Amino acid sequence: MAIEKATFGAGCFWGVEVRFREVAGVVDAAVGYMGGHTENPTYKDVCTGRTGHAEVVELDFDTEQVSYDDLLEVFFSSHNPTTRNRQGPDVGTQYRSVIFTRGEEQQRLALAAVNAANDSGRWNQPVVTEVTAAGAFWRAEEYHQQYLAKNENAFCHV
Image (cartoon, rainbow, N blue to C red; front, side):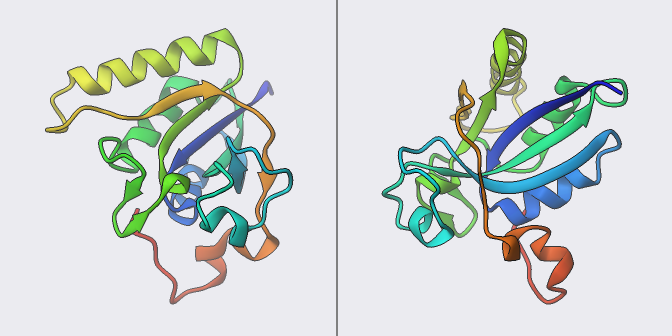
């Protein structure tokens, strides 16, 4: 088994986590925050929009079972990458479309995927997904982990 990490922000992290957990080869997924300037932010902090963090899902995936390209396809099929700082009813920089990369290969593949998404004609607007180097991942509070599985009446737009 060859485990790597991948981190994606595609709006509300609850639904995005569910989508990635369904992918064969994803061995773990955690929701949290990345891309901001505040250390150890809370959900309440991030929701203010002042920490700079995005809600993200950090994955551990087995490269022998699923490729990073496959994960990028799941990412682009899980949200609207043409709306800046918004997914459905959720508005704010914490809901931005972003791929946090680790290393040159992930960055190359992510940039190629953004270009392919723009060229696909799938959306009427330009793709605004950010591609940036991964920084510190701050795991969200435990009640957010697998939130939709724990709360049968909860929903997410994804």
